Amino acid sequence: MFVIMGTKEKNKETGHGEFFCPACKVTRHYIKYESAPYFSLYFVPLFKLGSEKKYIQCQVCHNIFSTSVLSQDARRMSLLAVVNDLENELKSGTPSHVIYHKLVAKNFDENLARVLSISLLGNTPKVCHKCKSYFHERVNLCTNCGASLADNSDVTFLEEKKAADKILKELKG
Image (cartoon, rainbow, N blue to C red; front, side):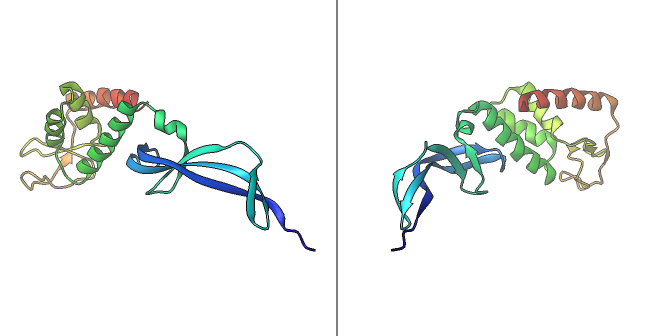
């Protein structure tokens, strides 16, 4: 008689919800799992051999994370999601003053709104000399008036940006 036995990892879904995915850098849906090794006979799991491991899986990027990511500071995680969205908006040509007003409208502190709207402009922000709007370093034409953009050489602005970059770095942790 031929006996087939071994071990098999058995996964069980135990919950789901929303979390800030560290890989996607935005809020995503997750599924929570419990996994444990089982003794199997003829490929049928019979009894548990070890302790259960709990983990979550992002339903977009499918990366697996420890359940500890769920207990991270929710305020900080939501701020990181906002920062990611704002940076994408700035790269698509939205001027920094529009980002500032959007943040203030969402009840952000005016100082934090200013820091975010300046810091996310990239290393060498651009300026429109015609309408005086600031843009992300990747943008070449002003979306307000259509004029060509130039590198910003205003020393006062660059010092403010340097301070804003430092504050944003501290907020990101």
